[in-house]
Image (tube, helix red, strand yellow):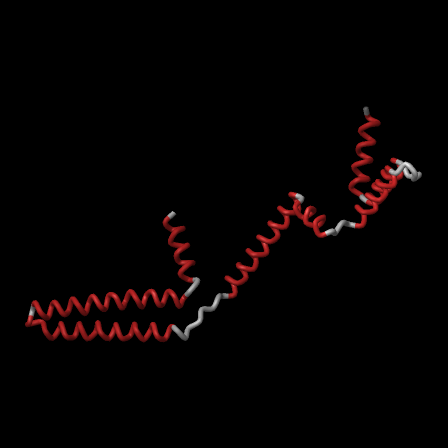
Length: 171
């Protein structure tokens, strides 16, 4: 579990190298400030170590100046995404889009959207017109014409119809 958390942190940190550099520079600057204060206390407490104290404070102040320079230089740095991360992002996005469309399609929501915008397939319109004609008393079309038209337009319906006929005959 810890390895997984460390891996997630490493990946997240790797996403913005400039932020990582800025964070590290800030930590170094804080340690340099603490070192400067510590060397100052050492020089005050031990006058015989005044030379080491001065050298330590000088190094700490140089580190502070360097980290300030790093922070200034970072304003001109721009993060770039590696090609593989861009590819993973696109593949993940495409996968999510396909899954969402598949769920919408299988749930019938896409059919509802098609009906709302008025796009009804020609095959369904033809069947509906024949059904309306069949129900009209003044028209000669009957049940057989409707079933015949539905079988001619939809191969799946035709296969299901034949299978149902075979089941009836077997009884």
